[in-house]
Length: 137
Image (cartoon, rainbow, N blue to C red):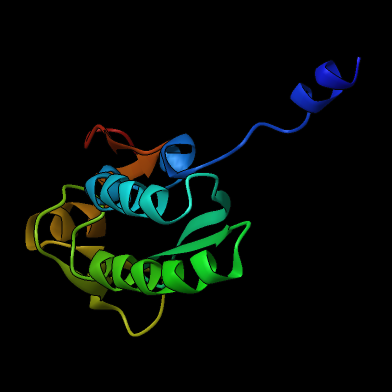
């Protein structure tokens, strides 16, 4: 009975389990990060993954304080790298606001995706780029 109880806890979550919360352009960065994290701490737990201010933000826990300290460096590296890669397509990009407005949402985009994002013709839903029909209101 105890064995069944141990298995019924919350499922272990790691980066591949949560890729749907960010754009596909960043998926390769996060999959490489996942491999690096596994080499440092195979049982790491992903606590939070999100896009914020045009970059990815990642929070993990580890069973070892030493592993967690080593993981901080690779996490910071991946977060900084995301600010140079288009979240939509993975091409080189930069952090921008829609229509270069002085305020509003910041996203890291390449020039091509920036134009379409500014015109509201592309968006990210469940980790995939969706194209809006330009004829819709």
